[in-house]
Picture 1: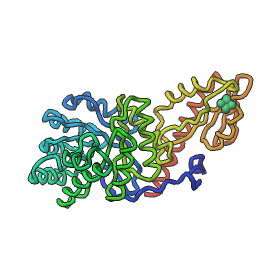
Picture 2 (picture 1 turned 135 degrees about the vertical axis):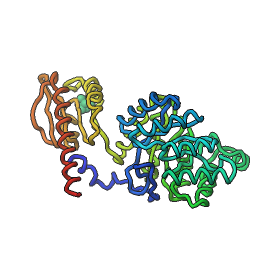
Picture 3 (picture 1 turned 120 degrees about the vertical axis):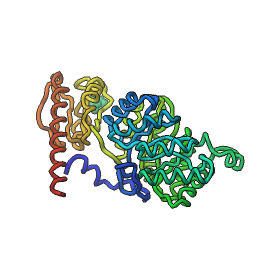
Picture 4 (picture 1 turned 180 degrees about the vertical axis):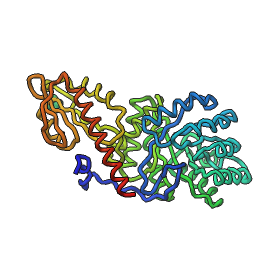
Length: 380
Ligand code: SF4
């Protein structure tokens, strides 16, 4: 049993996911028992295909499962074809109002259209978009935002509230259902986490489609991360949510990192090295903060899920190491103890420790990947 399996047998860590219908976004499954996916959105000019592809690459390297690209004009959907061909992950085309952009994006290789059918005008237009989605194997995302609710709903409810957001979402969904189109997911986002969570809770009860979670316009890197962690974290903890997007006024790559960290914290998904570190104090046997900063950077390329504990002294070091694949605990005389699979293994000098830990983690990742490949082969 690995250190991670060990954590999974504890019943108080279990999250029971809401049972949603499964849909596909290109080759990625969303909903049902599929892993919760992490997505972000490019902020380049879409018509600049090279810049957009470059950003998609960075997002892919950070682990993005799905990337959204906005299509505000014809130049964007024209570039979308080149972009979709180059992207390794499925792309969602973000469409607002212009139904023609939706049709063009579907033809250009979008795996999903983010479009609200109630906003695109006549029934004939809706029919055309749904047909284009069907013809090209696109799913859809209905994206309700508290800041852009229909006027009629705002007048009736007085202000954006969970009930108005859910009603809006269900109205859009009904249009797709009436066209016998069921490959859709829904989001009901607000910048206020209370409103967001209440809306998703009601929506989760009202429909069985997969839910795309997000606290919209959450803010700058630190404050937005905290707001998203509270909002998304409480929903995910309650089992709600099939795909997530963290909205930060920051590099989109940060959104992917934060998204994975939220899922990792809840044990819902594991990617890369989960570093457990103490805050350090006068007892530390080496500089914990600086070491962890360096290790985080040096291990960013590892996507294999594993855990590493870097603890300043024996007060908590051996205990934390018990639950990690690799551990280091500061000791005396310029050296510390290296742990493997929870057991003390050998001593290592503090000044050689970073290189050593990087080597150990890389070797462990290679070993885990080889075992995974062997298991896959055996299963086939
Ligand atoms: S583990 Fe040791 S060094 Fe780290 S904070 Fe606790 S007492 Fe201080």
